[in-house]
Image 1: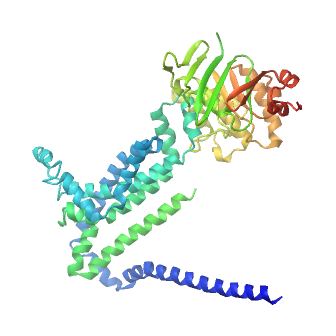
Image 2 (image 1 turned 180 degrees about the vertical axis):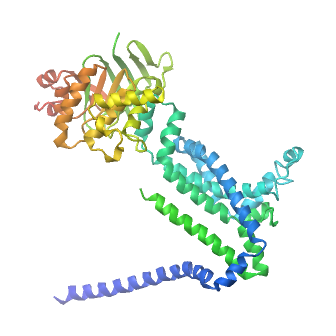
Image 3 (image 1 turned 60 degrees about the horizontal axis):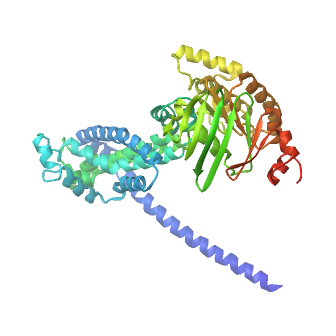
Length: 270
Length: 237
């Protein structure tokens, strides 16, 4: 019976071609992701990189990045946790609209985020006159850095927190209430601790996003060394004068991102 | 009037659940096919779902009255609830679980929690985590937790369904004996005839949200009203 044999052989040949093609596509994308990272890490002798880190702009930028991302994370977690709880528990179209709106900044182009922030809090923005009367100028201050970071990074935390809260067993929350706990106590003593690892994962992602924030910060907070220049902005500035400094700073940020990824992965495992 | 008196109607999804009973000395055994509204009925009584009309009173005090727009919140109803999978708090040890519902200073809470553990004969489990427990142990911890909160009525949703057949018989005997000793108004959902026998209560059969028959297991067996009841009591129409 020759026919089936031919069919099988042709099938095997086609299969090989498909597998080869898919393998090639997968390999190309992997190379696209890995090659720039390799270039970043391998492209310079360690001595020169260490010299790059001694550039006078590095320390203030690193300190500013740490301080501003810490403040942003505080803002995001303090407000984002109850917001996520309300979204996760909320029923109906209005809550779905809130959920979509909260997710939007995550997919907004950074330049758009910068314009939006200027139009809201800038000197000629919606809140500008009110803030001016209070003697507060937000743009081009540390507060602007924190606002820009919180704006772009909060959605990552809120999204993760909403899905962590949605994964909670409803029986767990209901039983707590039958045991005499008010809604608020159930939130604090059951929902928060049980959802903890999901919340921590979301906080890590949001922190990474805040740490890398560049476009909105540049437009809304400016690029002033010692005042609003965070690490990504320092990289941008260094690129014009000293490629090695830019590279050293980049490696610093890659290391932070990598450490975070490993920590999130480890935390996800029960 | 002592006991738990329920006469209510609620809409859950597309189904209307209508149920009336009085639970006092003997437990109410709620039976019926899957999707008949048994769990919903418990949630309506406990306050997890809001009835469209009707009344719930516990020892004479109203917990819910649609006509008077009265709806006592879940946490002030003093009705203990055991969900099918027990829902132990995974982040607390057994003692922490049992102490959760006790309103007292810390030292007193721990003492009362240990007392509840002793009552369920599980003193040895105090420091264990829920994920380290067997099904039978989880059920006892959940019972101890409900009991420690001093409920004035108990609702148990298929308390034996999640258990291995090998431990079900012993657990059934233990549960029936404890429920008799506590003599709290109790509603037990089950689809196992052996549970109904051991609990020796009034059986209510729920089908598609409505009570189709009620009475002792014997009276149901004598004249089953539907084919489900007939199958339940092991007779054919």
